[in-house]
Image 1 (spheres, rainbow, N blue to C red):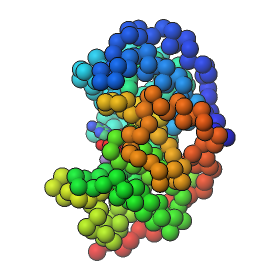
Image 2 (cartoon, rainbow, N blue to C red):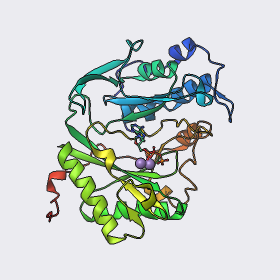
Image 3 (cartoon, rainbow, N blue to C red):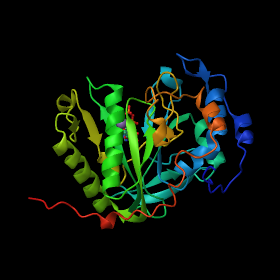
Length: 306
Ligand code: ATP
Ligand code: MN
Ligand code: MN
């Protein structure tokens, strides 16, 4: 079955859906989806979505006028968000700041009411922010890379992780690429996580330099896949599974089982309109077992630096 959501609050977000202001406002102009459609979407996927975001520092993308206006990436708790929880953390700058933390469906719906479309959690819990419980390899295809090559890259990452004893999980970003997530237990401190992610990406590049690149430089990305390991430092985020994307078509990021990769047609294969039906059909969580795995990064030996 589906992972339990560790639900702390009201299960049914119907109350908040009813209180939604401007439900008829068009959020996705090319598709005609309204703010009410967005709220209905999150209400429908809530039990799947919550385990991915609850109790983690969270950034959101808000689009107050929909995709037709400007959207902004919000890292901090702000005025008017009193009903949503927060955690005070040291920022990378050294200053302290309040980060959003949702605990339940009502919190999610409160953010949707504030025109949040995308949800991007840390790979760490708000009560243990110095240690990661998840690594994400973000595979970004450069120009000239085919979808089959992106899929192949995800399998290669999976297999290379398996070779060093780690089981990983597949996600569509809802954009152009794929994410491979590696759960950690016990949790590891960020410096180790970052070293591991960088060394893994660099080893992949060293083995197939014509196919992969681990530096963000745009000119290097042509005909290559950027193995973006930079999601794995303190304060970085990746999009949550089941989050909408603020892109035409209202695509969503989706957790998939590895066996589904073969017939996957594109990263934005699922949308606000189609994901709820997929979830109804599922009888097991595609990421079943992710919370129970013992995967200790301290077993990994860093390559010797020259
Ligand atoms: P795609 O498959 O199209 O690459 P993506 O979600 O992986 O979609 P990326 O641009 O690769 O998009 O970004 C990876 C992650 O980095 C995002 O999911 C997001 O959490 C984070 N991110 C992206 N842009 C920003 C930004 N401007 N500020 C902070 N974090 C960002
Ligand atoms: Mn990406
Ligand atoms: Mn990226």
